[in-house]
Image (cartoon, rainbow, N blue to C red; front, side):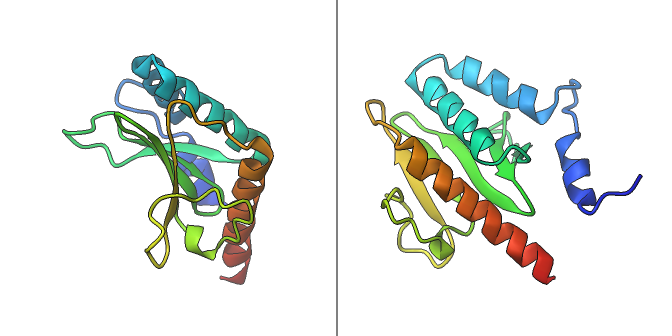
Length: 149
């Protein structure tokens, strides 16, 4: 069986050395956080999956200072990454500068030519409809660029 997107099939099933899938690694990261950051990351992850049921979860950029790596959501390319810091959960959109963002969700990394990010803080409320629309727009941008190749 061949796939129109062989890279998606490959990246979605690569287990960790312990045999955990990327989704299981993200589950573990959320549980490990055990505070508002874990709850926020979990909520954002659920919204991403609702907005794009075909999204692929990956974990990339593992290194000694971040052995768990960074959660990544992709569909014909990276949609966004999810990093956690002491005071924020940051979702960075790989092609965020090309997205319309009519609800002005982007509030970080605004000066770059490509990336845009949203920093979520402890008491922030997520505009779920606007966030899902942004995820769909990012996915559609990736898909249109993939078709153009």
